[in-house]
Image (cartoon, rainbow, N blue to C red; front, side):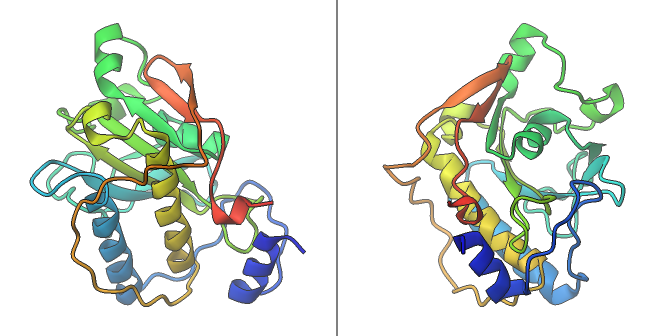
Length: 236
């Protein structure tokens, strides 16, 4: 039996085949779950960027018909007051949409997008106008359903920053691997699994020096997709 199947059975019961749409079902949300997700997102954001420098983290989940995704404002980290704190976009739009459709990490260089005047990766004009105007970089990964890793996603996880891709280190392969590890933990919380997260000091330590992800491919101007996925639920 494959590792992801064993994990699914242990955590959530027997795998059930789900069509790609509608999206994977989520556990009923409560304050305890939101609190745990907020704490995890704060730890996630601070794992990438040193204290005192700008970084945000958020989860986007699908609409019931699977055609749209929206930022979960209640659990987002450091987005209070930002115009995109509850942004809703098409399911496959933007860097996070590429992460969802390709089921691998995606990195967006918004500085290059501005320089080249390239189309905004499927965002509608009114949606693009709501994006934080000083934002320069985005890293996004898919959130897999632990019970059916080949089925519909639970959503996407993003970290973004007013720092450039290079300054935030989002362009390093190990950054994608680190964010996917956070997404795998997040998938358990979103699926109703109770996790006890250790209380830690949220200090920037930098990403790991080695990675299973070797490189990425540019798929559109300023938009890159990792050549491999490192989710534990995708291990063969």
